[in-house]
Image 1 (tube, rainbow over the protein chains, first blue to last red):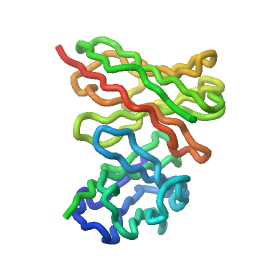
Image 2 (cartoon, rainbow over the protein chains, first blue to last red; image 1 turned 30 degrees about the vertical axis):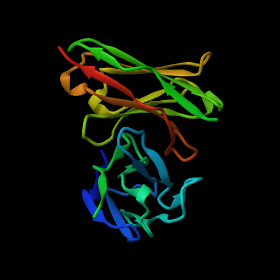
Image 3 (cartoon, one colour; image 1 turned 45 degrees about the vertical axis):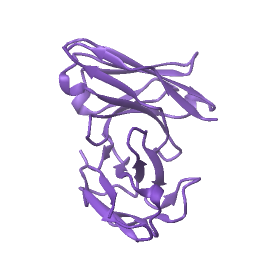
Image 4 (cartoon, one colour; image 1 turned 180 degrees about the vertical axis):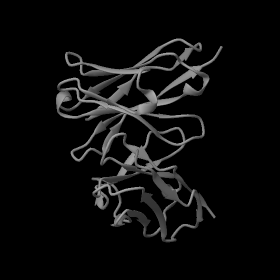
Length: 107
Length: 118
């Protein structure tokens, strides 16, 4: 199975900050990576698909990039609504696997 | 609009089975895969498997093979996930989600809490 190692597990930041969350795949996943945002008691929401493509309706302050097996989610200027937990997921090969999650907290 | 609506919360005893349903609407049911993802209390997301509603083919995570069955009813646009031999650590919120154009999950159900308790 492909392991997805996400870091950090917790991130404290302030409104207006630029933040970066990283996900490393244990093998090549051919850009088949998604990022999701989840708020307490709610279903996950798709932010980014195929590593760097912004899902329709998602604010442009969210962006994704990749370098080999390393993937990054960047929020350019944190807004109050962005404090949540973020997950990466590979869908290159079965079983599809998620990272452990990054909880983004208010500093 | 595109929507996935799941069945309600369940309480089951260890060793029992549970079936959760997910009714799709607002799109052509047979054109998109549907998956099941679960989340134990305070934990992360765990992919369980997916089904192709068109032909019924399934892929299950190794962890659940032998205990999970995913089926679909094309007449009602509903997929079902049955998990058998329930254990206490199967207590979780179970989500269905639609596979988007590239395989990512672009639409999610509201979640169904399954509690395993004696």
